[in-house]
Image 1 (spheres, rainbow over the protein chains, first blue to last red):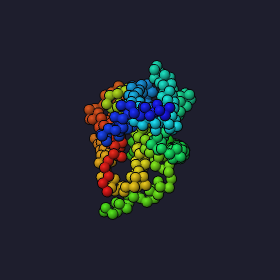
Image 2: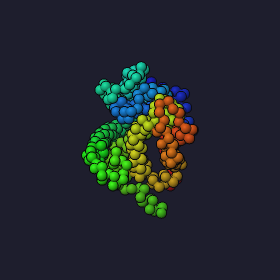
Image 3: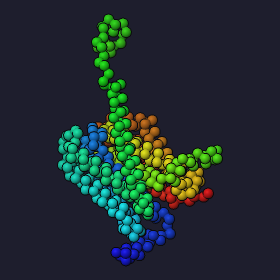
Image 4: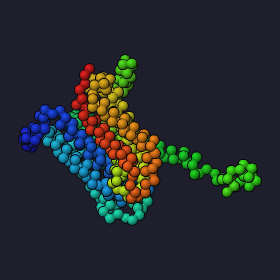
Length: 221
Length: 172
C-alpha cells in the first residue's frame, strides 16, 4: 500500500503540480474547489431549505433548471479534488477524516438524486404544502451531510488527529447551539410580531356620527 | 492612529481564545464555508434568475430565501473578523501587517465592499422593487441584469482571492 502511494506521489502529474514554480497554481486549484463547493452545496442547500418550508410560495419545478449548475459545481470539485489528492496522496489516503468527507459527499449526492427523481424529473403541477415528511427528512439529511462534508474537508488541513477530533466536536456543538438558538429565536420573533400583527383586537364598529366628525373616509366604510 | 489600530486589531481576548482552545480556529473556518454556501446558494439563485435562468420563478418568491443568505453573510463576517483579529495566534504576524501588506486580502475585502455597493445601488435605483413585480416567465430589465451579473462576478472574485490570501506576501 505504502509503495503504491509512493509511486503515485512520484508520477509526472504529482511532481509537476507539487514542484511547480508558479506559486498561484496550488491556491488556484483550491479556489476552484471552493467555487465548486459554493455552487454545488449552495444550490443544493437552497433546494433543501425550500423543501423544509422556507419560501413556500416558490414553485419547486423550476429548481430543475439549476441542477446543471449544481452538477457543473460537482464536476469542478471532482476534477480539482483529484488534482489536490494527486499532489499529496499519502497525506489524504492515510487519513480517516478524508474518507469521512468522501462518504458524506456520496450521501449528499445520493439524497439529492432521490429528491430529484421524486420532484424534478416529473414535476407535480401544484406542490403540496407542507411537502411530504419523507422529503423533509431527506432535506435534513442533505443539509447534515453537507455540514459534515465541509467540516471534514476543513479538517484535512490539520495533520494532528487530536486537533481534528476537537474541531469536529466543537463544530458539532457550535452548529447545534446555532440551530437551537435560531429555532428559539425565530419562534420568539414570530410570537412577538404576532402580538402586534394580525391578532390585534378587531376594530370596534364605528359610530357613524363620530366618523362623520373625524372626516376619515376609511372609518365611514 | 497606527498605534490605535495595532492595539485594537490584535484584540487580545480573541487571540487568547484561539491560543487556548485548539478548535476555535477550525470551527470558525467550517462556519465561514457554511456561510459562503448559504450566501451563494440563495443570492446566486436570485442572480441567475434575473440573468434569465429558471424564469418560471416569480422573483418575489425567491427573495424569501434571501434571509438565509444574509444569515450566511453574518456567519462569514463574524468569523472573518475573528480570523483577522486573532491571526497572531495562528501565524505570529500582526493583523495590522497582514492587512496592510497582503494584497489578496485587500482585494477580497475590496470586492466584498463592491458587492455591498452593488447591492445598495440595486435598492437605490429602484431595481429591487421593479424585479419584485416579475412574475413567472417575465424577463428582468437590462439594468437589473447588470446588477445580477456584477453580484455573481464580485462574489466569485471574493472567493477566488480569499483562497490566495495565504500566498500573500507579509512584510513586517
